[in-house]
Image 1 (cartoon, one colour):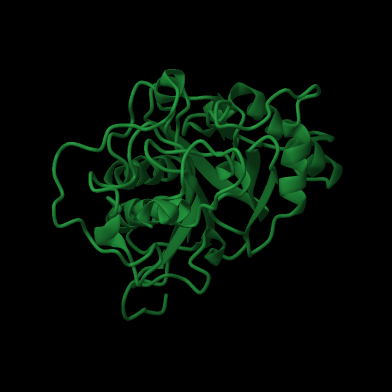
Image 2 (image 1 turned 180 degrees about the horizontal axis):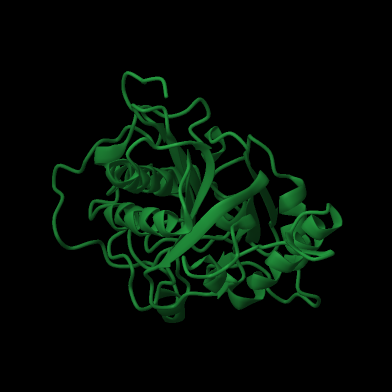
Length: 339
């Protein structure tokens, strides 16, 4: 592989800097909720690591290294708590119609693992009749492309942090060996993405350029995070979870993907304090397209894990930085809070 002078973001600074991956968003402003879908031109190797105490998932058991499913056709991040798991059905149905899926004799079964966050108490109108998430999942898949919006989009549409609105973030990094590592994340934690002053990101040491404002580290950084300002006691205890994907174009097997997902959680913990709480369902999928062979997988996997943590931390801050306000919000955006 050709050498690259210095690690740097890819041309889009998005997870779609990994060739063959596409992302689509769909949302409902009335609900203040939505869905984000990651898919590929071909199935990709995938695994998962769950570190939070309150996860909501679908088909994640298939991603364990000892399970027979070879990969995934799409990964779904959704709002809506357990209702949002139905988004994966809409994605699965659309993929089946397109002839995608794991072959079982004459049948094909799309593999679509999913994870959800709790956004049922964010000021949106949740009095739906028919569950809206299958249609949102299908719409997100149909919208999938190389370019997609961040902030209050897709699974990040109704996301909140302890202090300000959350959002959908992404970031990428091209390593010296030419391998790309990138992250996609919906940021909705119990904890704080900003420091006690409320004017700096915990992830500031990892920022490249001014991708989330260029505000720099907090000179008064300390141990105690700011108190939560989520406006209902139930929200502080329940309306949580950060879910994301770390991806690479390196050739990894399922066990190596699992190690990459575990390492990416380090970035989540760097960007959010506290992280991995009993009230969060923090989860990271890992995906590998296999386009680039590794010459020394054991050694290079460590570098990929470090890069995965860095892009995850950056993506989390970007998601919050890009959030936009809308009528009925219970929390301000980070940018509005700086005014």
